[in-house]
Amino acid sequence: MEQQGKTCIEFDYTSFLGATGSKKWTFLEAFATIAPIFGMMWKQNIAELSQPEDRLWDAALKSMSSRQSDESNLVMLAKLAKHEGIHELRVVMPYSLDLKQIEYIESRSKLKVDTTEQDVLNLKF
Image 1 (tube, helix red, strand yellow):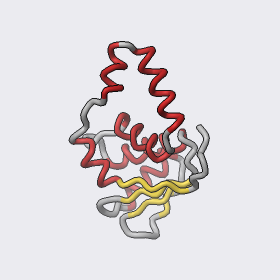
Image 2 (cartoon, rainbow, N blue to C red):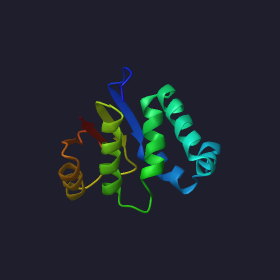
Image 3 (tube, one colour):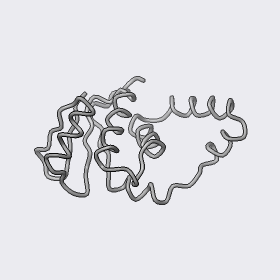
């Protein structure tokens, strides 16, 4: 997908963790279970009109879970961001990750994680 002028997108992981616990079905998701072809076409049209950060947020809510480890979620988030054509992702964390966690993310995502700011991870694609 085209990046639409965004070079760096910020993702608030703390807000994401709060949102996963209160996720409710949208009309579109319910409709898509009844009429999958119409739901798919509708989703595609909406996705084309939305911003990359909104698409990333929606994809994260569908693909990641607060029941998974932070490392696994962040690897998935990097994949989703890359798919959206995002060139740089700034992830604001509720806490700092230790070296082992960062190494896990780097090895699985094949990216260098910059942690120069406390509680912020910078990923460049």
